[in-house]
Length: 165
Image 1 (cartoon, rainbow, N blue to C red):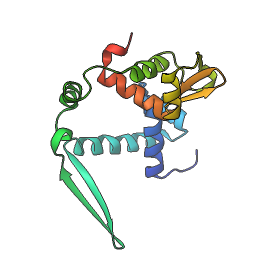
Image 2: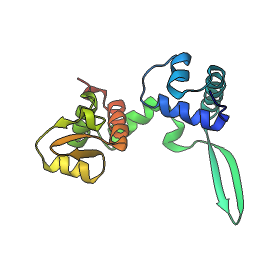
Image 3: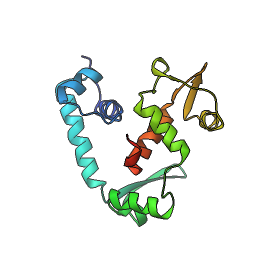
Image 4: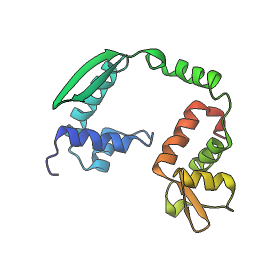
């Protein structure tokens, strides 16, 4: 395996993990084609960053050929635990999932995340809106989630666990 810098390795690992599936160190090493020790180092870095950034955020500002970096405490809703954030979002803004979220989650549950696993459906106003928003991709009479649609669907599942059948 060729040498990979820690930044590139960390980004590769995070991209691999974004689907939410559980992995072993060996499996990540195989998937990313990174050395096992590189995977260990990158995960140590990710874990340390996650710990530090749980209650803080890094602000990076570019001004007149100068970059200013500052770590600040999170404020407002972002300073609250994730469960509380979700409860506030649901009670204040979106108490029930919309038809868009229901359809995105349906596609996600049926693994319609690439053209080879697309689902055949009749065109509808709702599907056309999701295609226009680039959350769903239409190929002939088949539909599947775009990368953004997959992320949105996973967010909807997180916010509305009742959508999962």
